[in-house]
Length: 114
Length: 112
Image (cartoon, rainbow over all chains, first blue to last red; front, top):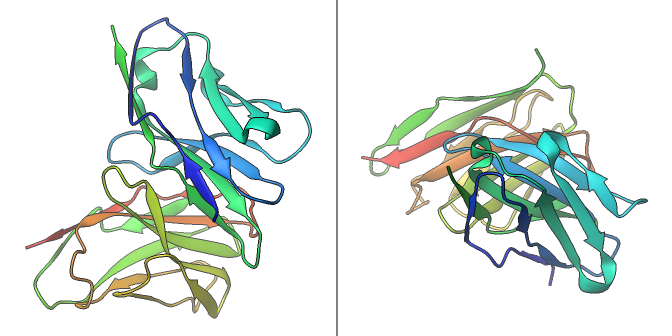
């Protein structure tokens, strides 16, 4: 079955520290992968996406993610976290088998300490 | 400005009542989606539409209904058959396929 796993429900980091949010997917075909961010009570904003090509993709707000097919992973990273990065982050995979839709992970809530 | 609008921001439902959530987009997107968000459960797909006058059930369609009479609009009705409707509802649109989905600001539905 197709699925996305974000193993960390909550993560707390200090401002200025590096960040890595984990995402693992289960999907038999070529994955189309996305990271979104959601501030409280708001909609989702796209951070970055991977369709093909270079496995290290750059996004907005200084975020990057690396696709590793052998590990079925698409982890999100940022070298230096800012207080404004506190939010919830969702990983998603786009599936094309019989239909076109996204499957979302359950999210990781990031807290940033001053 | 192009974008997706959802209204109202907050909606209150009484027992046995049907309520309709509005979603409008001016991005000229073919596909539109409705998601339900509950704490700790991520986003779950309710209904989606790849083209006008056609829509498909998602993973949790029971107790909900939709229509897609216009490209710009994809309203969601939460019927009285939905016994636990309290949630945050998000609408999204895309060019279709697995192209990037763009999200509206959401509607929070509460039960009186």
